[in-house]
Each structure stands twice: as C-alpha cells, then as structure tokens.
Length: 156
Image (cartoon, rainbow, N blue to C red; front, side, top):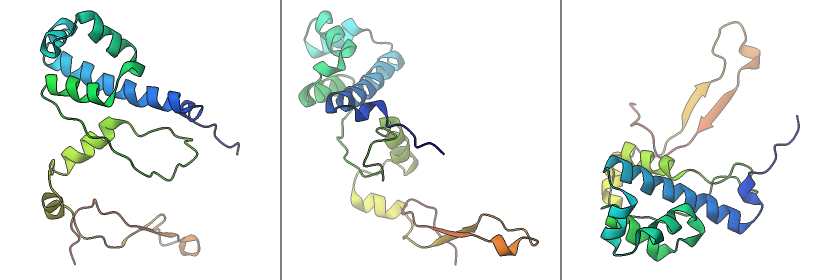
C-alpha cells in the first residue's frame, strides 16, 4: 500500500496558519448567518470600516490573536487557543477542525471548570471489544484495549 501524502498544511507554517485562520473565519461567517448580521453590521460593532472587515475575513492571514478575540466578542462569542497532540507529528492528516472540539465540548455538557469536567467524565478504565466474536473463528480472535477518558460510566 502506498504511503499517504502529507496534508497540504504540512508544506509550510504559513499554510498551517492559513488553514487554522480559515477555520476561524468559517465560524465567524456561520455566526453572522445565524444572527442575520451583515459584514457592515459587524463593522459597526467593531468600530471599523466594512472594508476592513472584508479584508480580514477574505484574507485570514490578516488575523491577529487580538482580532480573533475582538471579532468573536462582537458576536458574543469567545475564543480558546488549543494546542493538542494527535499522533500525527508529520501532519499527514492536517489540523483537527475546530468544530470537532466545539462539538466534543458541547457533548460533554460545556464544562467551564475542571470540577465540572470531572463530574461528567467516567474514570479511565480498560474497555475491551472483540473484532470477531463469532464462535467459529476463535483462532483469529483479536482483542483491542481502548483507553479513553471521554466515555460513558462503566457499570460493574
């Protein structure tokens, strides 16, 4: 089997930044659509010109960390910068889409503190499943252990 090519964001840091910034802009555009707010309305909320809003949203490379916070706050949103390890150090798969993090956070009940998180997460335990559980092929039985802190509580 041929080795998969690296994700396009592996070419350069600028490409990686562009992908992350574009992901952020998509979130802002989605919120604008949900709120039925125009770019002009966002410009008014930010006290900038509509041209500046278009410039930033059409060329995510113009975003700064400060602007990501300002644009989000203008839409009554917040921003979190998340660094993570995904067992893909060569970036063959690219960055995880921010919507994945958002949906996981929502799925966990939107905890705001570690205490709230601890109340929603089962203790880490070994979970075992069988790839092939038929009675006629026990010689090929394969067991895989999956450890995951974001699982439902285990009933003993």
